[in-house]
Image (cartoon, rainbow over all chains, first blue to last red; front, side):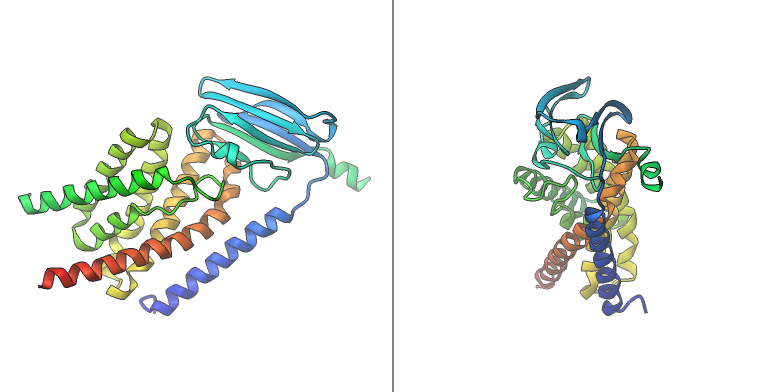
Length: 125
Length: 166
């Protein structure tokens, strides 16, 4: 049964469509109050309230693994420059939701947008 | 080990290394970490289906170590190694159950396990479980690129068998 080519095609198509569906669904999840957290080596080193940003600004995160320049605007955040060789984190551009974090693997830096903790309380009130 | 085997293995390692380095020079059109074609896997798959598991394993390790000396740094080494090992252990036994027309299946399974291995390593190294958010898109891209590299291997092997019969 598992030896037939048709079975394999069905298994892979279902898996591909499920994961694509998952990804699209994750993209559509909306966060109202955005808190950006910058992690280095799993430790949160900086927290920014993206809803409280009025003027765009830049700052540099420097760790023993390398430098990343982060740009912050209202409701979104990105890495504009990095000392890593592949620059995938820079090319990823802006993130404005909790779907996928910006990950700079060489510098072990992760930028994630999270909900504010008391959001649930605010909704149930 | 006889000289013919040794030469074949050295040749395949060199092929894999060249493919890997050339592919690393091409910038990825999609800015999501981990998405790439993985053409060097064609050589690993070819070795799996034509050589013994031990020989394939040696080729894979040699390629990963050399590729990281020439084109990477120490962090990417662990990603390549974990991905390569996951891919190897997921596919080396498939040659006993797959027919000649199903070699592409090994490509897909290899790509999926390669990506899963890399995500686990990323989560461990950055100590951020949030990187698992990339799992769906990496599974999807793994299936697409896996079909491509798998089919490449399939055509490669069928031509190789034709040449050897002459």
